[in-house]
Amino acid sequence: MNSPTGAFFALVRRDVRLAYRRRGEILHPLMFFVVAVSLFVLATDPDPLFLRKIAAASLWVAALFATLLTLDSMFRQDFADDFLAQLLLSPHPAAVLVLAKVFAHWLVSGAPLLIAAPLFAAMLNLPWHACPELLLSLLLGTPAMSLLGALGSALTLAARHSGALLALLVLPLYIPILIFGSGAVRAAISGLDAGGEMAWLGAILLLALALTPAGIVAALRVSLH
Image 1: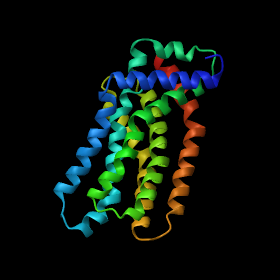
Image 2: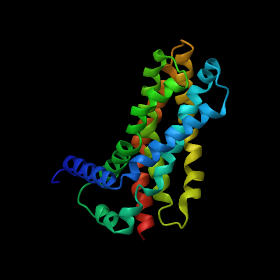
Image 3: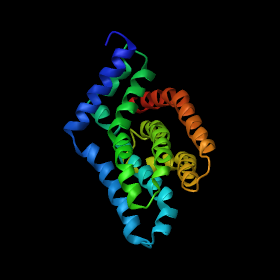
Image 4: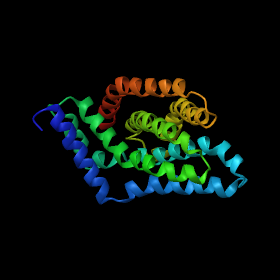
């Protein structure tokens, strides 16, 4: 951990190992995604054409709430055992360490959704030619949701019963990602070019990468005092 890069990957490995020891952190968002998509299928008209129409919205709404489910725990355990305070006192840039925790969160909560998405896309009669756009939109959108969610999690870290407050803070920030993500999949289903929606998702991700780390660090410092 002599270099920021080494510290980054060491922290990612630590957080991923801890998540695998607490398997619920991996299973909860994935199971929520599975249940939510399955309920969409069971509760709506089973007509294949209708399922195709709602496929993009169903998959993206399920992914959004599955991500939201994990945000409150992103920093809470480290806050409780004072590891977070030691992390911010590290000689390495705090923004790099925060990005490591966000990346670990995405590996645990976002990456499994990408793996499961094609299977549930088939349940919703999503055409196979639209699957690349679905996966690319999730690949761009879920890390952005983790970054924005980390900011909300840091802001509410010291609050009691922060779940509802966290949702109120984060959901408005997720709306553009939901719109462009589902829009990209709908365009692909219709045989249209989804490049515009993908460009917006990429821009949101780059903007989140540039702006949120400093805000997360500042919010964590406030929560620790």
